[in-house]
Length: 402
Image 1 (tube, rainbow, N blue to C red):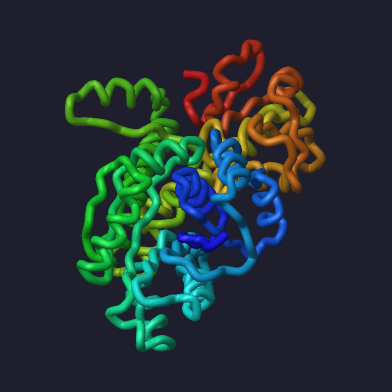
Image 2: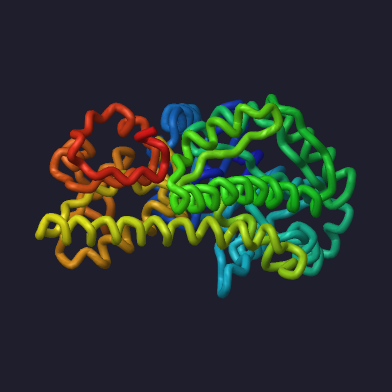
């Protein structure tokens, strides 16, 4: 197969993106450093959970439009979809983006389109442009370079990749238009052209805004707990105002975007990003507060009943009805409780996964029946259907019992 498109990175975004493009009968080579991931995909199977993705990958592979490899090859379009983790004190690490870029520099030719989709600090696309031209000066004004961040919701990725609007920023107008022409083949949503720096910032701002809004709800929940006010009722009533829309509180904020992207701004602009920084602290504190709340409830139970309680910890994912545990506040809370359990019995529940390498998982109905204290950390749909006996102690951090 001579690929038209090469995607570097076959994770939660790279694999669905590759599958979508290949489903339009475009030859796609997906590249990943993990040989196991490559082998799985080449069998027409997937290594992540995402509705509809398995069928799309299987069909694309069997029809010969999608293949995986650990090595890139020449193509017309290169998509960089690799992680951008942290180093040090929440400082963005773009070394994977750099490595991916360096890996395809020898393959670039006149007319090619190079696009970064990885969440990146402002200026990353321009840095990669300089990196490419430093090695291949003959490519200046000969290739197109752009940034286009993903905007998808885990559990609904395949639909949102197609239907959501995209922001596309080139290093110049020609690059912007070239990238728009590429995405128009696969995306039904509107394509909004801008420059690379604005597109990079747009991705960070979208998730920082969500983080700040959730922080308000989480801070409000702390206040209402002290004031003996039902937070769920309060928010419902406040939202009756035509210009008020308070989000629902939870046990923190997790995931690969909202809990991460604000730090990309804070790291580069620490003096200017006071509210964004504070929102991160509030949401991180909420997880700590929930863990302390559970510990105190367990101590009260032991003092009252003369025995240690059995505790059901309901949910590990970072949001409802998915299997994704990245940056999950629920997982952090469970870790804290288990570490301080002193041989107390804890039933850990996550209905969306069958196995966890650290935690022994328990069926949610069994956990509810056996536990003295039931802690709702994630609002999975299964939890709303439970019939819980009145004598059980319930700590509800996600609105299940309201």
